[in-house]
Structure formats: C-alpha cells, structure tokens
Image 1 (cartoon, rainbow, N blue to C red):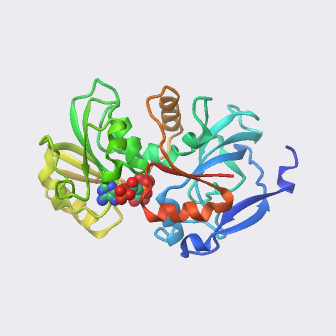
Image 2 (image 1 turned 135 degrees about the vertical axis):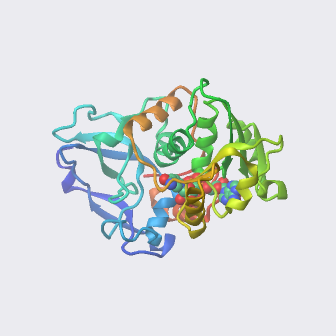
Image 3 (image 1 turned 30 degrees about the horizontal axis):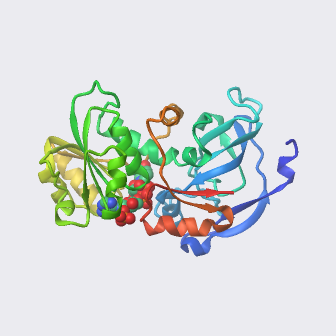
Length: 334
Ligand SMILES: NC(=O)c1ccc[n+]([C@@H]2O[C@H](COP(=O)([O-])OP(=O)(O)OC[C@H]3O[C@@H](n4cnc5c(N)ncnc54)[C@H](OP(=O)(O)O)[C@@H]3O)[C@@H](O)[C@H]2O)c1
C-alpha cells in the first residue's frame, strides 16, 4: 500500500474539551504514514476506556491531549499494512494488538500508526475484539495485582485474600481472572444482575454493592482482605479499614480526589500498617501485553464484550462508556 498517505480514511474526533458524545465529529482525514519505528494498521477493533472520555472532559488538561483536533482511543487490534524502515519484528499481514500513546490517540479511525515497541502479534485464537479489549484494562489489573499489591500470578505465592470492587467492569473483570491465577481467595463486588457473571470469572464470593452488606464490603465468609483492587469510585477509607487484615492494602486505581490523597498522606505520615496505594496510571510494558495475549491464547483469560458499535455509531459507544454501566468492554469496529 505504497500510497496510503495520499488516501483518506474515516475517523472520529473532537476539537475542544467537553461536550461528551455530542461533540464527536465524523470526518475524513489522510491515512497516516508510519515513521521508521512504526507500523501502519488497518483497524479491526478498538476498545473504549473511561480515561478516553475523561481526557475529553479535561481532567488532565495540562497534559492531554497534546493537540486538537484529537482522534481518541488507544486500544486497537488490526492488521499490519506497512512497516517503517527500522521495524524488524513485524511484517505486512500480521494480525496484532497495540497500545497507542494517550497524547496522540488515534484509535477511532479506519487506519492508525503504532510503535512496534507497543505492539504484539495476535494469535488466531484471539479475536480482534477480544484482543482490542485488553491493553489498558487488563494491564491495569495486572499492574495493580502484581506491582501495587504484590500478588504472584502463580500457585506458589503465599495465600492471600483479595477484594475486587466493580468486578463487572473492564478492569475488574480481568482483575478477577488474573487474581485467580495466583494463590488467592477472591471476594468481588458488582450489581445484582452481574453476580453469576462475576462468579463465572472465578470469584469465590460475590456481593451486591447495593445491599447493606455489599456497601460495607463485608466478606460473607468473614475474610479480612490482604489487598483490595479498588476499581469502583466513591468508597471512603472508613469503609475499607475494618475489612482489612493487619497489613492490608487498598490499591485505588482512580485516586484523583481529595479524600484519597488525604488518606494516602495520613497513612504514610502515621506509618500505618494498613495502606492506601494510589495507582495514578498504567505503566505500559509490551512484555505484559504479550503476557495477557498469551494467557488469552491459552484460554486462561477471556474478554467479555459488553457491546459492539460500528465506527459510524462511535458516539453511542462513547455515551455507553460515560454511563458507567458496562459489563466488560465496549468495542467499536470500523
Ligand atoms: N489508574 C489507571 O491506570 C486506570 C486504568 C484504567 C481504568 N482506571 C479507572 O478505573 C475505573 C474503572 O474502570 P473500568 O474501565 O473498569 O470502568 P467501567 O468498565 O466503566 O466500569 C463499569 C462497571 O463498574 C460497576 N460499578 C460501578 N460502581 C460500582 C460500585 N460502587 N461497586 C461495584 N461495581 C460498580 C458497574 O456496575 P453496575 O452497572 O451494576 O453499576 C459496571 O459494571 C475508572 O474510574 C477508570 O477511569 C484507571
């Protein structure tokens, strides 16, 4: 496809902060050309994450997006069409999964350029939608469990009791499956309609967050949690504290609020053994993307797709994500 850059592609973008799904515009723009360390992909599927619309809201407006107009979304599965001069490990025709830079985005389009260093080959066992669902959500779950909470994802680690909040969401549904690869007892919270779904992911006990027991985060079997992978929002430390083991940690993956920052500081200053660990962002590593893609190939992790939309209806996918009630991941397919 030597003349890709002279042709146009369909894309969805926004031109300023705010406006939600109504501010998304359907446009035609030139197909980008790969730099030396990049590949050009034909997009087969892209998944949405809450951070995509939070960037549009301006929550990190000092940093992101780098420029307007901005084509959002970072988690893509596609087919390699062209490779840059220095690309060694990928070739035209390869099916891949990639994570794009949040500053540049680019996912909501028919074609996208991706760094070779953020791209892994997608085996035939992993569909485009299942692969595109992985990067931010699965790698956040992986980082929260392995780095922030120190859980080993094999049966050789010490036994630990884990609580996963919002276990029906994008991050939570991977967190349950990954946690169960380790020597863990998993308690999970979700809404009543998703209790059987979250049990099917491997959770040992599941509580409805809208009941009084669920709101108190109490384990039905009386477990005290060694680690909480906190994927919901708005739960104060005072609710977690009585449910933690003596050295329990709460890993908060949405820590950008005054109460979390204050609790983190107080726990640190008082040398508390119970800790709050803010996880500000996922630090992407290609080896970790390869790891979760391989787990999916082996049938050890699956993606649950909440809903699929064509690119022509990307604004409906955007609104669905902003609504905050997805079960698993929301996918857009050109
Ligand atoms: N730090 C990072 O790097 C990072 C990375 C990824 C995501 N995040 C953040 O993590 C959060 C979760 O992301 P996500 O992609 O998993 O979101 P999501 O897929 O939109 O989560 C939606 C799910 O959360 C459930 N839920 C909402 N409030 C709940 C509560 N109080 N208790 C139990 N379940 C609840 C909903 O269930 P119902 O429909 O039944 O209400 C729904 O199934 C977001 O704030 C996101 O911005 C941070």
